[in-house]
Image 1 (spheres, rainbow, N blue to C red):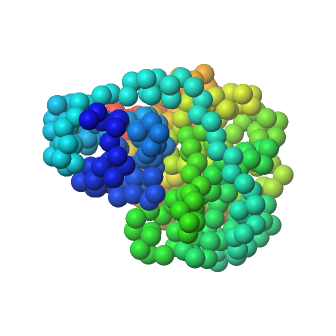
Image 2: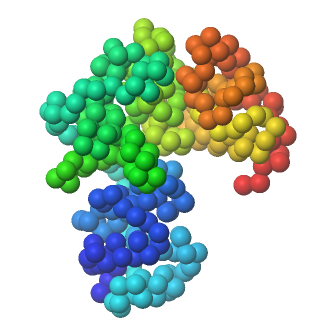
Image 3: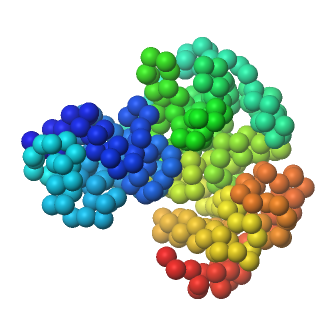
Length: 348
C-alpha cells in the first residue's frame, strides 16, 4: 500500500499519535507548532495544506518527518507501526508544484446561510468600541448553538469565501479561539486565509484611491478603525501575523505603493526579549514585502512607550493615542536603525 492510498481513518490515527487533534478535516497545525487548526486535509489528493504561516502542501510522510525530525525511512516505519500496514512512501511533488504554480480557487458559499443565523452582538465587542452600524455593515452574526461570534469573509463582489467564528465557551477556547463555522450537520465553511484579506468587501476603493494600505492582524481592528474613520478606512486584516505572496499580488493589482505595517505588540516593554522577537517579526514581514517590490514601507507601533499595551493592536489604544502613534510612524529604514541592537542580538 502506498501513502496516497491510506484511508482517512488511518491518517487520523497517525495525526492523533503526533498530537494533532482535529475539527472535521482541519488538524492542529503541528507542521509549525501552531495551536490553531489551520492544517487542512484534502481527501481527494490525500494531502495536507497549511493555511497559516507554512502555506505549503504536505504528504502524511512530510508531516511525520517534520514533527519527528526523521528521514523518509524512519517516517515509513513510524506510520507502519501506527496503522499496521506496509507501504512505500511516495512524495507528492506533482501536487506541490500544482499548488505553488496555480492560483487556488476561492470557495463561493451561499449567502443565505447568514440569514439563518442570529443577529446578536457580543457585549465585549460593543464595549470595545465597535459601533452597531459597523457590525451590521460587516454582517456579524451569532451561532447560538455554540455561543460563537460569526464573522463572514467576503470579497468586494459580495462573494462569501468563508465564515470564521470566535469561540467563547471555555472548552472550545482551550482548543482554539478562532476556527471556521461548522453546522450541526457537519457542513463547514473553511476559507483559504492566505488568499484573502478581511475588509476586502468594503475597503478596496479607498485603498485604490490612496494607493496605500494599513495591514493589521485582526477583524476587530478593521471594524473599530471603520468606527473611528468611516470615510477613510484603508485597513485590511490578515489572519495571523504573516503575509502571503497571494496577499502581496492582490495589493499590487490594486495599485498599492505604500504599506503601513501595524502588527500586534507582542511585548510588555521595549527592554524585554519579547520586544526583540517583535522586531524580528516586523523585519521578516517587511523583507517579504520588499522582495515583492514594495519599497515605501512604514511601521506603526508603540514607540512612545504607552503603558499597559501588551498584545495591543493599533485600535486597542485610545483614538487619541493611535493618532499620536500614527504621527510617529517610522520608515522601515528608521525602524531598523532605531532597533539595531535588537536586530544584531536576535538569534534565529
